[in-house]
Length: 294
Image (tube, rainbow, N blue to C red; front, side, top):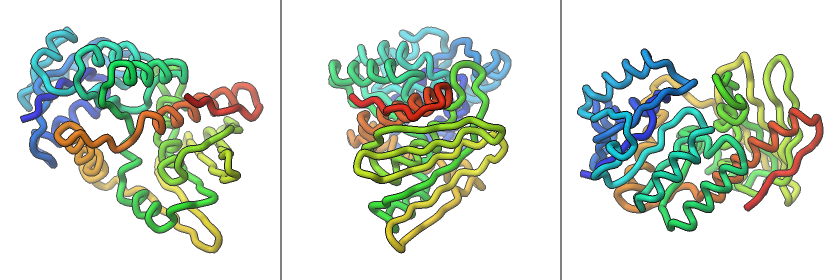
């Protein structure tokens, strides 16, 4: 059994992923969350973290407030922290252990901190990755199969309100990651505008391709469209069953920890972060902003 430490209890993913690994909704074999570190967070109250701790303990997870206790004797680490401002701090602690790490989305709060995370992973030669579950949904995978090299794509998703930090970076990651899943990397610049219905962004690629991303304040669905010539495909993500939404992500986690398969490169994840921060800067400046690269 591959033993995991879950760092963070302020996101629903901590409980959900554990449930998918060893609880009543188990979907994979060979992984077990044995410990979890909790700490105060602007993204979740202490009473709600108490409820999550109870749920974790019912799945035989030891919950502690000590990082050292949480990682003692484990084989890998899940960084499940809702507040992206804390990602660099806990990633820096985790890489010192030399263990494989999954860093839940978004990669960081700023492109500067994302660059530091990338460099730490390179320096310490750590196997790690970070992604949104939206990348793995059957609907987006089918779209990528039908239109493998689109010239134009549009994605959309909700824009949640972050309790701290930038809401676009925190929740826009889903829609922006969907765009790069469809289009691939190579984004050059972003022009974004904020209004009553949320943020709309135009993403220009170096080779002339174009993407648009709508992060909507008053609409909760996810979806998109890809086009090339006369071919086009559109999709809506079905959220009828949360376990099904996470199925491919949990399978990817199992392949990562048990087989060493890294499904998404950190370079790709860094570009997603750079897109998010460029979009936030464009909203503030009213101008087209360049996308940072490694």
